Image (cartoon, rainbow, N blue to C red; front, side, top):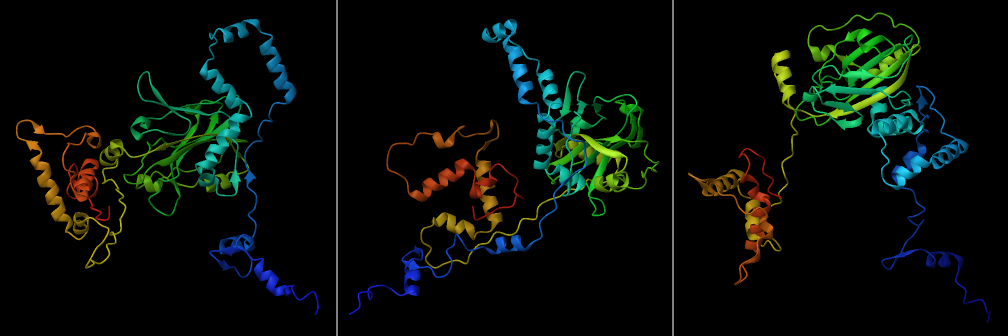
Length: 406
């Protein structure tokens, strides 16, 4: 008898060496080696072209020698060291911010934040970007002593940006600039992706008021129900005067202000180079309604999300593992539940003292000693304290949509 009969055939040994999951041997390639459909399609898709920098080159980072010189100079300053040790050193925040914006880290940080918010893609498409090498300061005067400064994505209400902002930047007197303020989500029609709120060209140096104003300033108009709108201020460096463009302030104000930053840049690509950027976010407030009623003399567009009807499975003969009260509330008429909660609310109202409010922290009220109530009663008390399920109607209007699945 041969001594090699104990060896398994080659195919059998391969099956034994396969990974085991749930006592079942996996046939074919292991899951770690096999590709999903999304990964296969990604491999078949052509590689995306790299994004093109349409702005100025970023200032190089300081070398190690420069950094060492600054550290050595600070350490040799006895007064500076003594103030730091005594915790008496005061650094003006404005100077620190200005130095950060003028360094190589400031423009790179601004570009990263703009790409995170999708501002670069919204302005120039997916294949272009620029680094804001020129610090741009935009401030709205909210009162005689206060102002709302536009940074990189901060929130500013439309009521705070009713008037034309003050724009400052450092530029030589013999240079020409273009300032653009556009709303990336403000278009009501599909013809133009943006709404231009301010456009000034041929600005000599930093004097924005002396430029040629093609579009006067328009306050932010984030429509009700559309969430936050991104409004971007873009500063372009001009290589020469731009050709004359006829203003299109005819008909509806919003339709005449349809705009595309990408098309505008393509028309003047040889003369414009983006250099500065600042943007903020704004959502609806009452000043938008007032602008539509008083200035435009038209109804304000209101957007509402059309929620789908909640799915409720068919009733069962013997529902198990579910509260009886919650089970019947799911199949009850929402108007009956609203009526119950309205009566419960009226029972809490005293004609002389008003509404008798409950404890501030109802879930933290100590329980009374005695027999423990049934579980369904405890669950209903918790729902009432948290204002969920049908108790959602106690402090709200009856026409609110009710979701019986909660």
